[in-house]
Image (cartoon, rainbow, N blue to C red):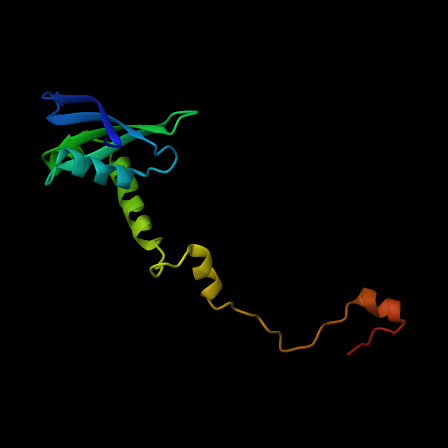
Length: 145
């Protein structure tokens, strides 16, 4: 049984694109647009085509995500039809997903990785400073320089 269930698959000849609506079972709140694109690419064997995730909707009380995707043959036509903001967000998500993957050795958990990292200690060169309130308690007059 596949995680991806096709709700609708429409070939829109007017706009020269394929519109896919799919349900992703068991991925509520965990699925990102980049991951969904990769899953659609592998499921429908869309190598060499431009896949644009338009909408991912999480269903309340269920671990179900419904996604709408547009599949174009030509990137130039896709950029002409789709809002340019969507492309900038996709590029930003792709860059952030590349940078955030921490390197973890096999068999090592994230907590162990954090424990093994050296901690930075800030050491002060001067001793502890005495404030005016502490000087008054001790009865010492404030020194003037």
